[in-house]
Image 1 (cartoon, rainbow, N blue to C red):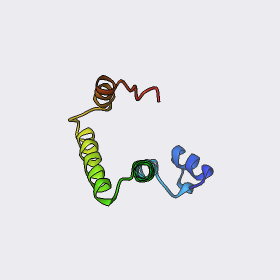
Image 2 (cartoon, one colour):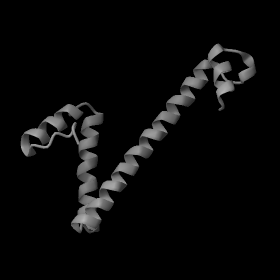
Image 3 (cartoon, one colour):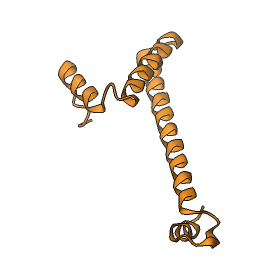
Image 4 (spheres, helix red, strand yellow):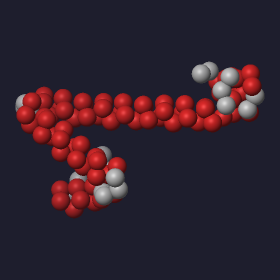
Length: 100
């Protein structure tokens, strides 16, 4: 949808062919698609780094992926927050993830 159509939709004009509610729904779906792509790409980048720099094979990469998915699920369900992760890494390793 181009800018002109979005503006018309926001104003609620019939010419746009899309209501503000439909526009909001469309944008929410698009945001989710973008987020899923970013997560998938970050996972792929971390896996190629583990493979190239540390020699991880398929078994270790799959174990890493399972562990990452477990942590991510905990964060998505509210059992764990990003701040919890940052704090734990800082306390256990001295690495401040907010600064790197």
